[in-house]
Length: 128
Image (cartoon, one colour):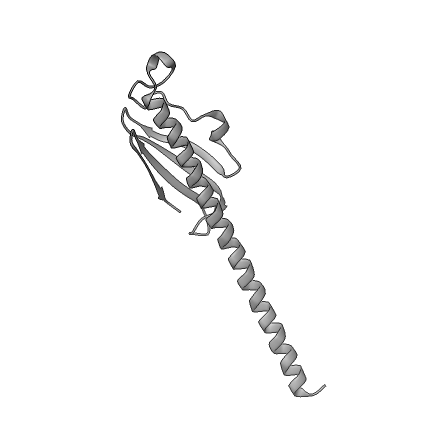
């Protein structure tokens, strides 16, 4: 083979290698983003349950205009998307933290989002 052919083979191998690395990075970023979106959806779902509990009278097993006593439904404590726990509760505000299954933006810790739930609002913030 001539030098020109060898050069073309080397350049081709380099281009294929770069394409593989870029593809792997895109797949990892996509999985992270999908997991973050799923954790946010779960937090919104749990938040809706908390608001339902808040509005339900105590005689019917609710909070009677208080989040005190709310627990995350057992089927939602751990899902295929991650795990969820209550970090703080007061009569009018409850904070729930969701930890996903994928590695977050810092490349060492898992995806983490926090939902602050009031009687009329659910606000989700991304921690990682």
